[in-house]
Image (tube, rainbow, N blue to C red; front, top):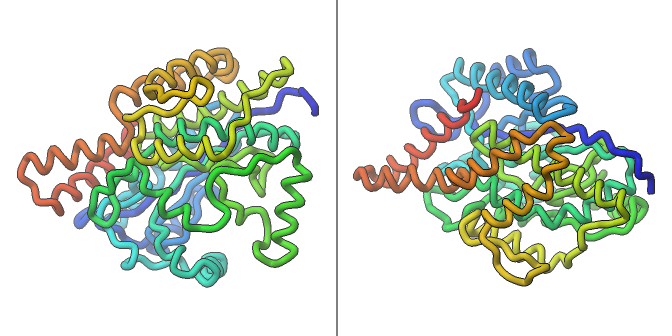
Length: 377
């Protein structure tokens, strides 16, 4: 396997929900809104499955700094155009109180096919995520790194959680989004595969029998992109604050480089059984950063802050090489202020303490999310 250094370019995709500025309920994107966004952002914006969603994607960026400028432009444009229709975007994986039964899917062939294929499961897909692509030119290297990188997916999820509420109730989870998404087929942690040809044969077997038309219908938490020579990390909730998005992107990029760097020394991260990693995935989904994750090497639950301190030490060389030390250091601010789910619950509980009704408190959360969307822009 070639040890030539990959490009480690990055690309970030985010999905947003659109809310009415007055009621703070979800609202469909008017055709004029999408047309205006497409005119300004060209191929970097698109509709999503539900008409109340909109998706953006950066270009290919060499550094996280480049991604920052592109994301600022994308977020600012969507917010400005949405405002012309009395709408506002929020970057949270679930709307705190809206009901999925009241939403309508986008009338396009692709989404009509999904509706017909996935039936009642896909109608509940009132969720948004964030995807980070890292450029790895060698296909076998992508598969090799996928098997190692999946160990860190729970850590990334815990930092990103932004979906504690569902249909007006506190679910008790930091990330409710995955309970919805995991009902789809071909989701969850990726299996361990030994080569690109093994991966290709598996995808081809499914296409041959007509179950899927191509690899884009494989929706693992981490996958080789079907469109680009990248590894695509899909575990994260979308995060309200721009700088937190960039921190997650920087971590993913640096983790990928760190694992590649080990290979240049004939070393690798231990491949843990999917069963064990899934336990940490659940802990991150349930508790976010508050209850720690299991260090399977030590076989003990370790406070999340301690795990992140160790991880930042491992990534120091890579952060410097990738010019992302500042963004990665922002992990400490996330640990201090909490992830979005923590902040949403704080707003909700403060509102209840101020004798707001439950409905008013939930609207206070949405108002908080509309404000956080503009932080750092």
